[in-house]
Image (cartoon, rainbow, N blue to C red):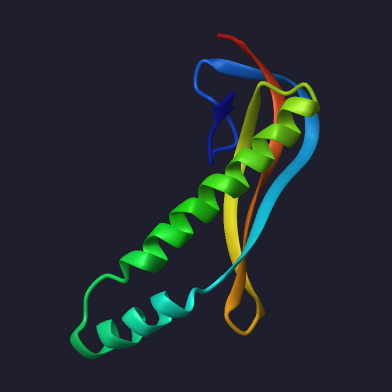
Length: 107
C-alpha cells in the first residue's frame, strides 16, 4: 500500500477513487506519565512517555485507515492527514484520514 500526503504519486496515475478512509484512536493519559510530565515542566526536556503515547496512537490510527482502504480494494492512499482533538479532560483522539485510490504505473 502506497501512502502519501500529496495529491499524486510520482510515476503512477490514479485510475479509480475509492473514497475517504479514516482511522482513529482515543487515548487517556497515564497518572504516572502526568507526574513525570509535571516534574519535566520544572526542569524542561522531552516528555518521553507522551512521545511514546503519540507515536503508538499515530501507528494505530494509520493501521486502521489502511485496513479500511484495503477493504475498499485500494492500493494507495493519497492526501493523508493527521489531526488531534480533546475528547474529555485527560483524553485525546488522534485521527488519520486520506483518499483511498487505485493507482497504476504510468507515464
